[in-house]
Image 1 (cartoon, rainbow, N blue to C red):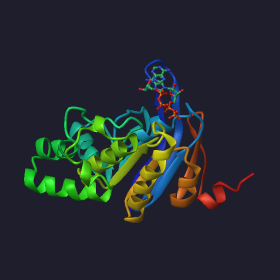
Image 2: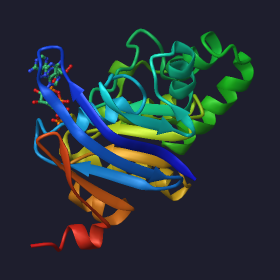
Image 3: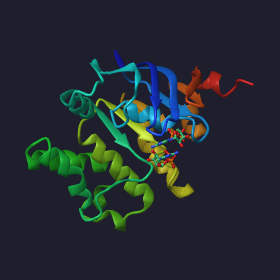
Image 4: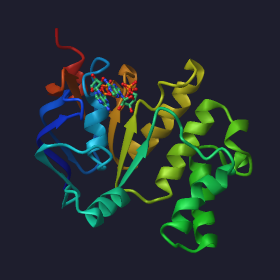
Length: 230
Ligand code: ADP
Ligand code: ADP
């Protein structure tokens, strides 16, 4: 199934800057698409259009069958489908790890607390943080915090996961533990779009690599082809 279908997407920022100049991208269920390219080329802007965090002026984007428009109910439906992990972990510092995971499912989705906690603990186990469930984010390493952020996103049961430079804020020794969790998620069949400079991850895990430059997609290829081109 087609999970993301972006066609001719153009975006101008309010200051007039033309950040996306007619970009197309299709992502099928279970694919891992890694977006690469120089800083300022529009990777993050493009990624954020997929969960309607960023608006655009031309073109169309359909996410899991829902066309993005400024209809708030549709935006809400799309955000239910699409989880996002940022460079900065964006955890609530005053909540425990476990409460970071359960807050939105319980308060926003109105799911039963006991059920959500059970699921949250399973997810923390899966990302290797079960022992830290009752600590606060500030007591964890950066790599652990990012794994909590991934688990928190999964607790909302998304069908698609977006990652915006998820390892860029980490000390080098913590990068691998986060990439390992992402690789596991990919192996379990999650549809993922990842903005990252991690070439080894892209080589190993990507279904396709997308190269952006100056607001355009300039190349799309499977990794074995992408990384051997002259
Ligand atoms: P990348 O993720 O590839 O580094 P971004 O998508 O963050 O690129 O940014 C693309 C371009 O859009 C950059 O030149 C950036 O300066 C510009 N840009 C980003 N946000 C804004 C904004 N709010 N207003 C104007 N220009 C912006
Ligand atoms: P990234 O790490 O995604 O490349 P940036 O450092 O480019 O992020 O941008 C950080 C924040 O500043 C973002 O919210 C972006 O929208 C905003 N921003 C970036 N460039 C500009 C710009 N030229 N004018 C206004 N805001 C900008």
